[in-house]
Image (cartoon, rainbow, N blue to C red; front, top):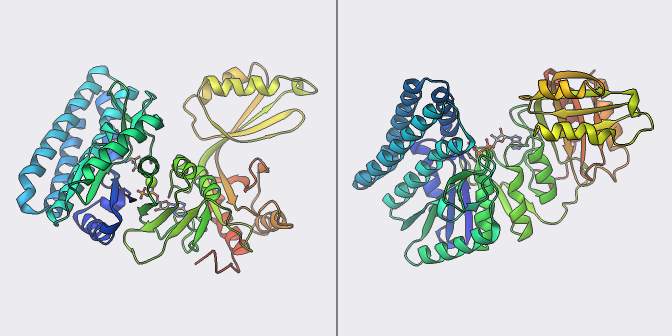
Length: 459
Ligand code: ADP
Ligand code: ASP
Ligand code: MG
């Protein structure tokens, strides 16, 4: 059995869905469990409408919902065989009525509570999974639609829920086995689940990858395929620098590190369930299924190139905290981190000197409050508009001269570095640069680090 996950761009139109159907058909003998994201930008559009409803513009929000309905209707009508249009119409009517109700509830509450956020956002995958299942059915594949909310059971942390693994795995195994008796393919929505009391939850933005990994681990899949719009994991972020090389293989650890630092191609939490069960993951391109993609494996991937990829996290803020009270004192770091904790603001990079601490954050909603609290114990300066460049590779640490090459390349390009961190993890070297310098810095590093490549690892 394999899990095949298709991201938003892979199901964004009738044409894209037809490609997906062909890809799945070619793997029917491997008993695919298909996990799909919402179509195209649906999740963003639902959330934008929800904000309007919360701000008191219910009419605008409902207008957006109508547009989304028209989009789904157009693409689905073209993707699904006419004989199944009555069933398709029922799906569209049911889900869009329900989405309207969610918008009305949000307007009534005058805010998007986390539970309402989940309820509204869930419609993207509820729709896409039901519609893709019908598109498969219309092409003669015996297809079952599995509502992810009946199998992915989570805690109640709305918008960031975590699966309750043993319950989820038990439900998955049971439901999938029984659906298999009469169906060749099972289609399930990613991203969504439900709490133990049956309330809809979501696994965090980009969470369909996570769903695929949970499903794969739950059913003991032999492989999890993540189908997206790029050829695989690349040596750099294609939106920052086109022309990166494809990685043939990376390790689970490297992939997790890349994902955490911005390589959006994979959701960071994804690898966990797959790692535990040692299930290989493969990243593939739904527009070019003939390309081999990237295989993510449990063991380290040796290469003569110490760096495998340059990831970046843009739009971050550096907070510098300086206090003479830090001199020889203990408990100071604790007090600082306690403030970030209380405002639920994750910290990414940290570096300390005798009297100061610099750290980076990417969520700045409560930065004002954090700054006010910290100012009671220290001088605080805030530098927005920064980016973290993260070089990922198992061998960075052991390779003599790796960091010299990195800093040499940045220096020659005239790029100044504000913070440096290495050693927190064996496989990453991170620096911060001005966000405006990201493309130039990536290009300089890419040229230095990938001028020659190990053909066994890079395509
Ligand atoms: P999906 O909708 O299929 O989940 P995502 O948008 O979440 O797709 O992830 C795929 C995108 O990740 C690519 O289009 C690419 O722009 C981005 N990306 C960032 N860094 C990398 C990288 N190192 N390799 C490949 N893709 C990357
Ligand atoms: N549709 C969800 C999102 O946009 C989940 C996903 O696509 O992975 O975040
Ligand atoms: Mg994604």
